[in-house]
Structure formats: structure tokens, C-alpha cells
Image (cartoon, rainbow over all chains, first blue to last red; front, side, top):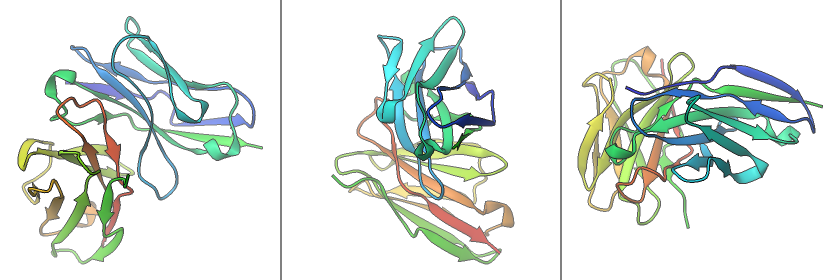
Length: 116
Length: 113
């Protein structure tokens, strides 16, 4: 079984400061990894994903994430945040061998709060 | 290209009633999956359909069911609603069996009173 741990439920950051949202996963097989963002009263928007290859993945809105197999981590980073980045961020994992049938396993989410 | 469309967006039901939620995937996408989001349990996988076949179901009671039509549109049904079924129900679509491309809709907010 897979599991995802988002180590921080809430991260306050000042505007224009860098931020890192932490995600660790547990799986006995290779995985696909995803970061989604959810703005208030909206669905989930895909920020970026790691499937294979380069461990540094770049996504939308200036976000990037690094896959670390030895530490089973997939931390999300942004060098300079904006007020509009205030949202809930979810890390998710899936099993490639399942062809999507097992769905995504999500972490509990991290609420990113940008302070002016 | 239109995204994943879910209807209705908001609804209120009474305990004991049933509800049907609809999802139209991105054009050309053949896989549809459903998730429940609650403050307490977070995001949980309900079930997944591909070519009208349910391939997997999460740990939910039999009151939760779904189906997929030949045009890939999907519906989920919850019977005998309980207060704890109040949640945001999210539909996601994928183009194929790779499981590496998953897009979500805006969700249907269900309140059970």
C-alpha cells in the first residue's frame, strides 16, 4: 500500500520569500508523483508531475519539485511567492503498474499562507 | 478544449435521500475516477472507470456506486444519504491507461441535512 505524508499542515511565508512544501511517500514499487493546488471553493489544478527521468521537475506558476528516491521525498519549491499563491497544496502518488486503476493517494495537504 | 465538467456544482439533500452526480471528462479521455474530499478524511479515492468498466473501488460502502457511459461520461450515486456524506466530490479524467495524466473538475459540493 502507498501512503503520502505532508509534514506541514500550514506554512506561513512572507511575500517574495522562497518556500518549500515537504512531501514524503511510502511505496514498495516505483511511483508517479504529483503536486496539485486547490484554491478556495475550486477543484484541483495540476502543478507538476514526476514520471521518470530528470529528478528536477518544473511546473506552472514558477513551481518546481525534486524527486529524491533514497529519501522517498518529492518537495515542492518556489523561489519567490506571491499573494496569489495562497492555497492548499496536495502531494499525491500513484502506482504506474496499475494503469491508473487504483487512483491517486493524497497527502493531507499543506495550507500555504502568504503574508504581505 | 473544455475541461472536466461536473454538475451540479452545489446541492443540498436530506438524510435518507439519494443523489446522482454527473461528470463529463475532457474530450477524448476514456478514464474517469471519483474522489471524496472532507475536512476530516481529506481526499479519498472512490472508484475508477475505463471503457464503461469499473476497474477499482476504494474503501467505501455499497451505498456509493457509479457507472460510465459509452461516451465516457460518468455518474456516481449515493443512496440513503448520511450526514457524513457531506463533502466535495471530485471527478478526474485521464486519456488512457497510463495513469500519468490526471485532470480534475471543479467538484460538486454536497450538503446533507
